[in-house]
Amino acid sequence: MQRFWHHLKQFVGYSDISYSHTEKTVSALGGFVAILGILWVTESLLGFPASLALVVSMGASSILLFANPHGQISQPWSLFGGHLLAAAIGVTCAQWISEPFVAGALTIGLSIAGMQYFRCIHPPGGATGLTAVLGGEQIQQLGYSYLLTPVLLDLLILLTVAMAFNSLFNWRRYPAYFQRQVEGAAKPSLPTQQTSLTHGDFLDALKQMDSFIDVNEHDLKKLFELASQSAQQSQLSAEDIQLGRCYSNGAINDDWEVRQIIDESPNALPEKDQVIFKQVAGKRQTQSQHLSRQAFAHWAKFEVAFENNHWVRKTADSK
Image (cartoon, rainbow, N blue to C red; front, side, top):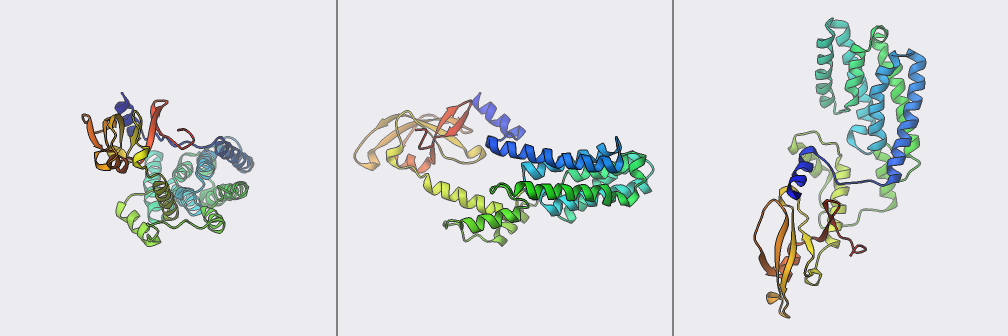
């Protein structure tokens, strides 16, 4: 059953990563303030119900800017480029193609390609382009002025609120450029053995993956440094390996394993100090095996415990 739930979570893309209540509250309040302003301005310009169609796409953008302010698709270039490019394509298709279904489908197809070529992927922009085609006669009569009012005006409101609101919290400045400036001034990255990796190395790696990833190379480098520091600080010794406890190798996906110590044969000589273990989680099912306590400690990255239907890492405070 544990394996079933493990693979099911991987299949549907469920993440065990959680965030603080403060972070969730801040994100919600930011989105509320931004959309309140956009609703007021757009309704004043277009009236009801024409304003609602555009506000839908701006609402999706507000989720990105306040729930994921440091993500690549949330940055100003993606925000403005994605919406304005799709809006221009949508207006053009609406004027030249009489069949709305064809015009709408072509708008999305061309918007995807355009965002990729101009490196401004922003999914909510697709809805802005569709609104130009399917938003009704009142919006279609605006022609290319649709790009300025209300689209550009709404984007400026959203950008202003995102910059001002997120600036109140030192862990979530927007755009991400400001957050990197704050982090760089506050505390330089701790040196690790892997810090020889450069900006170009990460760009080359992203290019080789040949797929859009919602992360920039700065965040990747920071994540890599923090993970390296965590790995260095969590090395287990032979004395840490105790009877009855469970340990994980900390690997990813199919290589991840959890082993439990079920017996031991203590000895003053390291090579004869043996432990017997069984695998209790992971893809590869094995019979009970034995290793020296020292070799097992080299395999294990940290101690784990099964809580609330999933494996969690044991910290020094929880032991």
